[in-house]
Image 1: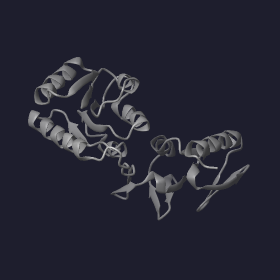
Image 2: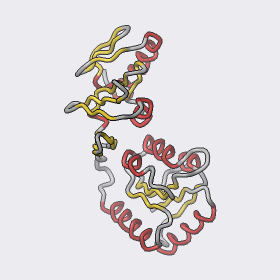
Image 3: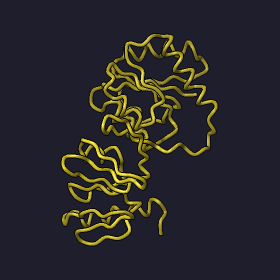
Length: 235
């Protein structure tokens, strides 16, 4: 098994490496000084990832990592709790808040390694979830179920196959979290390519509802939609 440690502080990397190698001498332990080093190298099976790093932070690294692989067991280590809900979005196994005890670290690693040993290597991953906070509730939303989103009266409204979810937020933030299967057709609309049924200059019709298509985005929308269909193997 390959265990990675990504932290921009050398002292912390070496301290964690020493503990882990002592507990699991059979494991290969690799250290990374930045998120780019993680993404440019063969990915480990388990990654301890600091969030507050210079240049690319841990959350940005995790999002790019998930575009490459859903198999890496991800454990965040951070001095702040601010990113707990975002950690849910990138399917983190655990979120350790510094300072944490040696016993707590070992307990979390044991649980993660147990999951690594038990999971079917070729099984389908569980669907990714986004955690949306609306009206004081935390709602887990599967991106595959999102048809489109729009901005209305200072709120973002997510239209899914089953319900509409309203919350205060920015459409740009949602766009970044959802990735390349979605397209910003207009400053007020974000559509899921999977649910596009037809389009013309000015309008995109979806399986349920429709969205405005800005004139200057028409050609790029068509190009990206065709690319999506090729990527998904559609005819």
